[in-house]
Image (cartoon, rainbow, N blue to C red):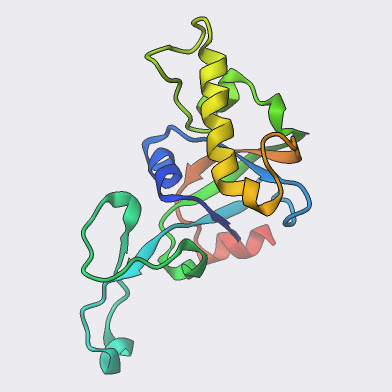
Length: 175
């Protein structure tokens, strides 16, 4: 099992069933494989109420920013989330390679990106609004790393589905 990072907004879309695809720049990390189970790293907090010196006796309890819960502590960045805190697991259904700007209307929807101005999928200019929204989101995450929308990098297009947390024996058999 490998980790995958998602923003709080994208975690919400995964939980609602509105996001079933993600794109990742080729060459930045090793690609995920079809059938592989990924655990989602998201913004989180350990809310164990025990004093620090008794931490080992306290069961792990977590809060997740995507749930909109109030936590009296600061949120911890998703990159630091341990596997034990993971609650969302994804099975990779397909892996394709494409240029970023080859995204389609259907792919935008699978990415969890809505159209704007009340336009629905298939209506005139829906594609332009959806792709514009996607490109803005893409740049907010990737432009400062040198992979802007305009640079049109090659990407892995992953299609996934949410699955139950795998048991230890299932995880070992996948290796």
